Length: 214
Image (cartoon, rainbow, N blue to C red; front, side, top):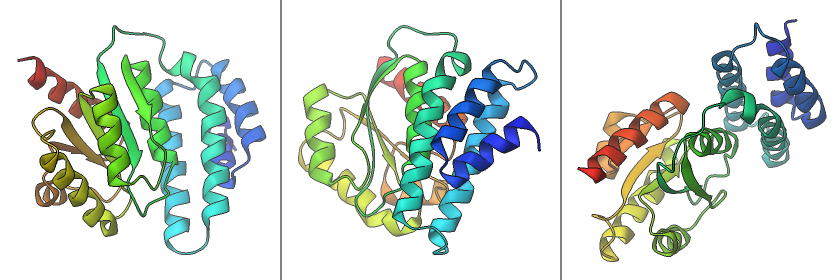
């Protein structure tokens, strides 16, 4: 089994020590590119999320895989994102109420920070009031709402309604993200953009920040 495949399996298994060791090895393996590593993390995230949805994995397994990702990213970040930029904007991000998926969010946050964004991570199962309070506190440019399944649509709608009620909707751009997201869902919820992976998230954030500066 190739190094990258072993790494992916370690994440799926929630083996943080093994994942960190393999991450260290990949940094020294010239043939393992940053794109390959990010793709491997994305595939691992899909497997873990799928196993949770089917009842094969439960919260403890999810948390172990999330810890494995966090430990690995601490080693991989300098290699994955060698170029740092001036601050690109202020972001508040969290997984919405009723959802405890953490792995994808952590990967996105790592990529955003590496791209120069100031990111405030609220964690998982975040209440609407917590999102609103943090947006106010840090004067956020972007609010990223992570939601793995379409069952979290009511939580997304609730955040949008709360922003409108607080007079913040025109001040912050909102992006929803997750494996189940689509243009149709984004339109129904009323967000400014949606994304399903790292590349699309960075592209949407850049587009929305450009709009704010116009």
